[in-house]
Amino acid sequence: MIRFEHPVWNNYRMRQTIAILWQCCVQVFFIAVTIAAVDWVVESFTLSQQSQEWSWFARSGSVLTCAGALLAVMPLLRMGITGLVARVRSVEHDLPGTRTWQDRLCKLQTQLDGYAYPTGLSLLVIGTLIWGYGDLVGPRISVWLLRMIG
Image (cartoon, rainbow, N blue to C red; front, side):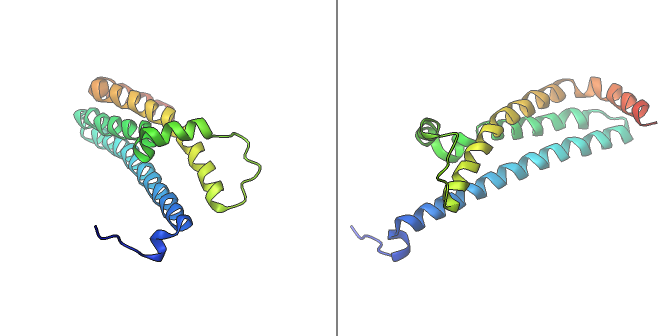
């Protein structure tokens, strides 16, 4: 068996840094997907309001539901089940010794994971309601918003 020997990959600290940066990229991707899904719903609502065809708004709920599901399982997808269990067991809420940027980033990721689950579940529920009833409640929401604005 041929073993790849490279000084960068044999350095534990470098592999740890690359893994942390990869996890940050994954989180940025999930946040971007969530923002795009919410924007999709807003744009679909505007299009439906202009055309009075509320099926666009109702169908946009499916996109929001998918984004909510991805966000809710983000920690699991990012770390895997064993990594998630190990992270939950080893998290200390007060990390006074966070001196390196890797330690601070790890703490930040743990906090973001804590926000991702309830936010994802909220988007999942709202998206499902819009998906199922958006064509029925969309016109009423539109009238309500117009009364609030004007």
